[in-house]
Length: 232
Image 1 (tube, helix red, strand yellow):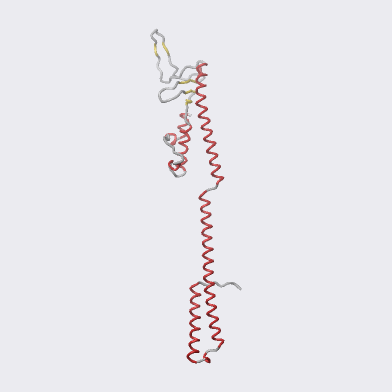
Image 2 (cartoon, one colour):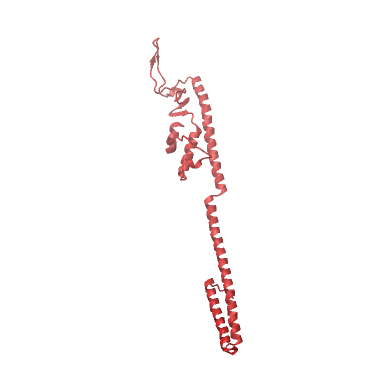
């Protein structure tokens, strides 16, 4: 037999109706005597009251069970939302490893670049390549000799040149149209992190206090391709 579910309010109304009927039958017996109500009528009324009481208990239990089920459904939905919003470990680990590999490549390249500049400058000097002075001017010495600076990279020197460190900049090597000088990998990484924070919808301060990125080169942040092509 299928289970019939009613509300607690309906069950309480049924109990009130059954109780009222039983009370009236009892009052009728007291008023008119035992012959006014049969034993069966009285028993049926009493059974109806008991049935109504059990119906209330059933309705309360059903309401509690439904509330528990609804709560669990809500918690399961919340659980899915939490897991979806938190992301998974594999994705975070993969992103971390990509970031690690990219940073390692930049650090290795930039560090090796600085070491190489010293070697390359010495090698160019040894090969007779003059110092590159794009803004240099001819000078005449006291004995009448004219020194003409190397102002344009020529095929005679395979389109190469070098410059010594000066105020605000270090040694550099020139190859065709490219100036190869020291670049701190921190500048590139900092710019990349700021761009990443902006792309994610957060500011660079979101990395604090664990990672405090200061002095980010805004030109590198705004247009990293143009910045790198002009310096790397």
